[in-house]
Image (cartoon, rainbow, N blue to C red; front, side, top):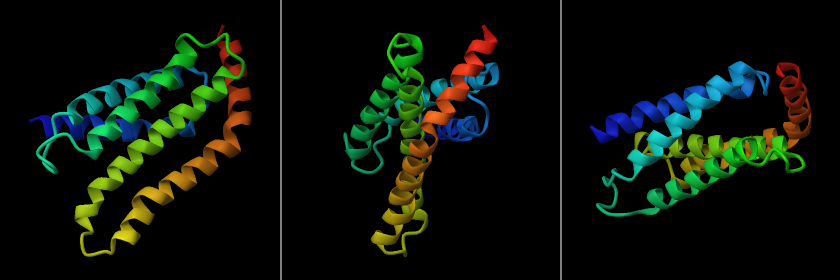
Length: 157
Protein backbone atom coordinates (compact mmCIF):
# COMPACT_ATOMS: atom_id res chain seq x y z
CA UNK A 1 0.00 0.00 0.00
CA UNK A 2 2.87 2.37 0.85
CA UNK A 3 4.36 1.96 -2.62
CA UNK A 4 1.00 2.75 -4.25
CA UNK A 5 0.63 5.96 -2.22
CA UNK A 6 4.24 6.84 -2.99
CA UNK A 7 3.72 6.29 -6.72
CA UNK A 8 0.47 8.27 -6.85
CA UNK A 9 1.89 11.31 -5.06
CA UNK A 10 5.20 11.17 -6.91
CA UNK A 11 3.27 11.18 -10.18
CA UNK A 12 1.14 14.11 -8.98
CA UNK A 13 4.32 16.01 -8.13
CA UNK A 14 5.76 15.25 -11.57
CA UNK A 15 2.55 16.46 -13.24
CA UNK A 16 2.67 19.63 -11.13
CA UNK A 17 5.85 20.40 -13.08
CA UNK A 18 3.50 22.20 -15.46
CA UNK A 19 4.16 25.08 -13.05
CA UNK A 20 7.37 25.77 -14.96
CA UNK A 21 5.31 26.63 -18.04
CA UNK A 22 3.05 29.22 -16.43
CA UNK A 23 3.71 32.76 -15.16
CA UNK A 24 5.20 32.87 -11.66
CA UNK A 25 3.75 34.94 -8.83
CA UNK A 26 0.13 34.32 -9.88
CA UNK A 27 -2.74 32.62 -8.05
CA UNK A 28 -2.48 29.66 -10.44
CA UNK A 29 1.23 29.40 -9.68
CA UNK A 30 0.45 29.28 -5.95
CA UNK A 31 -2.27 26.63 -6.35
CA UNK A 32 -0.07 24.36 -8.44
CA UNK A 33 2.80 25.06 -6.05
CA UNK A 34 0.71 23.88 -3.11
CA UNK A 35 -0.11 20.70 -5.06
CA UNK A 36 3.59 20.14 -5.77
CA UNK A 37 4.65 20.77 -2.17
CA UNK A 38 1.97 18.55 -0.60
CA UNK A 39 2.57 15.79 -3.16
CA UNK A 40 6.32 15.94 -2.55
CA UNK A 41 5.90 15.80 1.22
CA UNK A 42 3.70 12.69 0.99
CA UNK A 43 6.05 11.15 -1.58
CA UNK A 44 9.11 11.82 0.55
CA UNK A 45 7.53 10.54 3.76
CA UNK A 46 6.39 7.34 2.06
CA UNK A 47 9.83 6.87 0.50
CA UNK A 48 11.15 6.00 3.96
CA UNK A 49 8.84 2.98 4.03
CA UNK A 50 10.26 1.53 0.82
CA UNK A 51 12.95 -1.08 1.44
CA UNK A 52 12.71 -3.27 -1.66
CA UNK A 53 16.29 -2.58 -2.80
CA UNK A 54 18.38 -2.98 0.35
CA UNK A 55 15.93 -4.21 3.00
CA UNK A 56 17.23 -1.36 5.14
CA UNK A 57 18.11 2.32 4.93
CA UNK A 58 19.83 2.94 1.60
CA UNK A 59 21.16 5.59 -0.73
CA UNK A 60 17.68 6.53 -1.96
CA UNK A 61 16.62 7.25 1.61
CA UNK A 62 19.62 9.56 1.97
CA UNK A 63 18.58 11.29 -1.26
CA UNK A 64 15.08 11.70 0.17
CA UNK A 65 16.63 13.63 3.05
CA UNK A 66 18.46 15.84 0.53
CA UNK A 67 15.16 16.34 -1.29
CA UNK A 68 13.43 17.35 1.97
CA UNK A 69 16.18 19.91 2.57
CA UNK A 70 15.98 21.27 -0.98
CA UNK A 71 12.22 21.69 -0.66
CA UNK A 72 12.54 23.29 2.77
CA UNK A 73 15.10 25.81 1.53
CA UNK A 74 12.89 26.61 -1.47
CA UNK A 75 9.92 27.22 0.83
CA UNK A 76 11.91 29.35 3.24
CA UNK A 77 12.19 32.23 0.78
CA UNK A 78 8.49 32.95 0.09
CA UNK A 79 7.46 32.12 3.66
CA UNK A 80 10.11 33.75 5.85
CA UNK A 81 12.81 35.09 3.54
CA UNK A 82 10.97 37.77 1.58
CA UNK A 83 13.13 40.44 3.18
CA UNK A 84 16.26 38.88 1.67
CA UNK A 85 17.69 40.30 -1.51
CA UNK A 86 16.78 38.23 -4.60
CA UNK A 87 14.47 35.97 -2.61
CA UNK A 88 12.44 35.14 -5.71
CA UNK A 89 15.56 34.02 -7.60
CA UNK A 90 16.55 31.82 -4.67
CA UNK A 91 13.06 30.33 -4.51
CA UNK A 92 13.12 29.61 -8.25
CA UNK A 93 16.57 28.04 -8.03
CA UNK A 94 15.79 25.71 -5.14
CA UNK A 95 12.35 24.74 -6.48
CA UNK A 96 13.94 24.05 -9.84
CA UNK A 97 16.48 21.73 -8.27
CA UNK A 98 13.76 20.10 -6.19
CA UNK A 99 11.96 19.23 -9.40
CA UNK A 100 15.15 18.09 -11.14
CA UNK A 101 15.75 15.74 -8.21
CA UNK A 102 12.24 14.37 -8.63
CA UNK A 103 12.80 13.78 -12.35
CA UNK A 104 16.08 12.03 -11.55
CA UNK A 105 14.31 9.88 -8.93
CA UNK A 106 11.70 8.94 -11.52
CA UNK A 107 14.57 8.07 -13.85
CA UNK A 108 15.91 5.70 -11.22
CA UNK A 109 12.76 3.63 -11.62
CA UNK A 110 13.51 3.32 -15.33
CA UNK A 111 16.81 1.57 -14.59
CA UNK A 112 15.01 -1.74 -14.13
CA UNK A 113 12.77 -1.16 -17.17
CA UNK A 114 15.84 -0.80 -19.37
CA UNK A 115 18.03 -3.29 -17.52
CA UNK A 116 19.63 -4.54 -20.76
CA UNK A 117 21.06 -1.06 -21.46
CA UNK A 118 24.60 -0.37 -20.20
CA UNK A 119 24.82 1.48 -16.89
CA UNK A 120 26.62 4.47 -18.43
CA UNK A 121 23.69 4.99 -20.85
CA UNK A 122 21.04 4.74 -18.13
CA UNK A 123 22.99 7.08 -15.86
CA UNK A 124 23.50 9.52 -18.71
CA UNK A 125 19.87 9.55 -19.84
CA UNK A 126 18.07 9.33 -16.51
CA UNK A 127 20.39 11.32 -14.23
CA UNK A 128 22.98 13.41 -16.07
CA UNK A 129 20.73 14.67 -18.87
CA UNK A 130 17.92 15.93 -16.59
CA UNK A 131 20.46 17.56 -14.27
CA UNK A 132 22.39 19.31 -17.04
CA UNK A 133 19.31 20.43 -19.00
CA UNK A 134 17.53 21.52 -15.84
CA UNK A 135 20.55 23.50 -14.67
CA UNK A 136 20.84 25.26 -18.03
CA UNK A 137 17.15 26.18 -17.98
CA UNK A 138 17.27 27.41 -14.38
CA UNK A 139 20.42 29.48 -14.81
CA UNK A 140 19.37 31.02 -18.13
CA UNK A 141 15.87 31.98 -17.00
CA UNK A 142 16.29 32.73 -13.31
CA UNK A 143 16.71 36.52 -13.48
CA UNK A 144 14.05 37.29 -16.11
CA UNK A 145 11.56 34.87 -14.56
CA UNK A 146 12.13 36.43 -11.14
CA UNK A 147 11.55 39.94 -12.50
CA UNK A 148 8.27 38.85 -14.10
CA UNK A 149 7.23 37.06 -10.91
CA UNK A 150 7.89 40.15 -8.80
CA UNK A 151 5.78 42.19 -11.20
CA UNK A 152 2.98 39.62 -11.00
CA UNK A 153 3.16 39.63 -7.20
CA UNK A 154 2.89 43.44 -7.17
CA UNK A 155 -0.08 43.33 -9.57
CA UNK A 156 -1.86 40.83 -7.26
CA UNK A 157 -1.55 43.14 -4.24
